[in-house]
Image 1: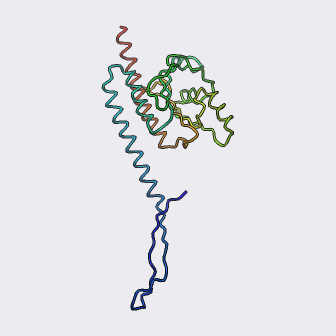
Image 2: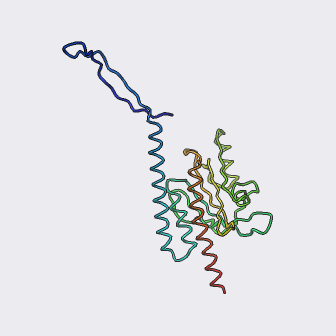
Image 3: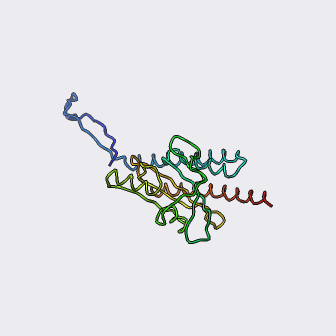
Length: 222
């Protein structure tokens, strides 16, 4: 799809003493690249502002774990429909074990009723795969019937309208602490490279907050 700017000019003969209209010219200018640049710049400004607002709000949290959820809520706005925060509970075994720490559904900020419970992901699920790889994993379902798309989301323990997912590991001080998952519905485009960069920046801030929460908890137990 292209974006065009158009305008009209009157055609007249320069040979006559009086200007006699001969017709109308319709001119087009392709402004697709300029509009895309403006949109990308606008998105970037919004995301930088969200990161700034999240940092200020998180700084007011007494509990670092609460600050992690604050980062999650600010990141969701305009970026995804759902966000899931899963904590790695046991990294010593061959099986990745994750526990739901927080979830923010669209329009309802805050943790859901399933927080604190183990999440039974299949071994080939994007969330365990990203913790094993230590890198971001994207997953999409396109060009399939609606029933198959809902089944695809259901088997991955995601909302039924999910069509695009981005899982990025929570890394701090050389350790993987968990995984952050962003989900988009069928009405939205999939995640691209700029989305991945933003998600990884958010994940780094959340991981730092969770790592600090562990340090504080350990100091209190001594």
